[in-house]
Image 1 (tube, rainbow over the protein chains, first blue to last red):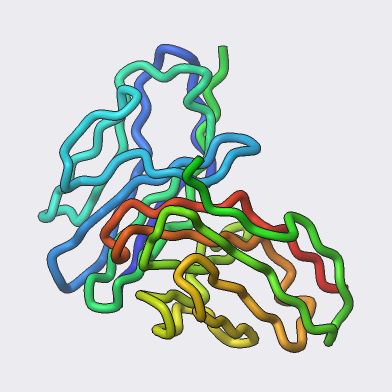
Image 2 (cartoon, chains in turn cyan, blue; image 1 turned 30 degrees about the vertical axis):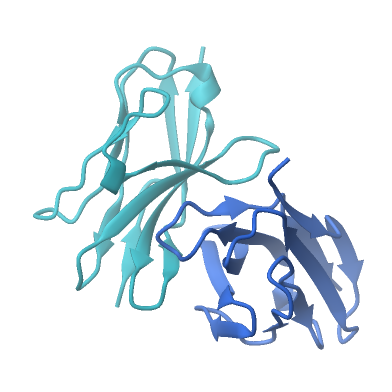
Length: 109
Length: 113
């Protein structure tokens, strides 16, 4: 069965520190993975997807099939990065997204 | 403005009183979906629709119904709400399928007493 695990409920860092939000998945097929972000009082929105291999707002995520991971990284955190981050896996057979439980990132000045 | 809208945004009701949460998108998207968000559980899919008159169960469909009579609308129906359906509900849409970027509505916070 497909599953997405985000082991940290809360990650608290200081401004300028590196950030890594962990995401591990289990899926028998070829995975398509996403990171969605929800800023305070805003709707959930796509941050990035592994297939596009792009960097958004300084964030990157690399798919590691050997470790079944898709960790989200940013070298220097900013206060405006404080938000809830969700890792998601696409179940291509059923055309649905499976979300992790989310990690709240808190960046302090 | 391209967007997904939900109504109502906040709702307090009592057990057993039927309610409908509407969802509408103006982007001509084929795929629409409903999620509920609960603390510690993240987002879980309730139902999704690949196109008009095509709907399917997600991970937690019990106690919910949906319909897709028009492309733009995807209402979520709770025939007999119960307290365990107290949650934050999100509607989402994407161009064709789950692999596309999903655009989320603002959320509907439901309290069932």
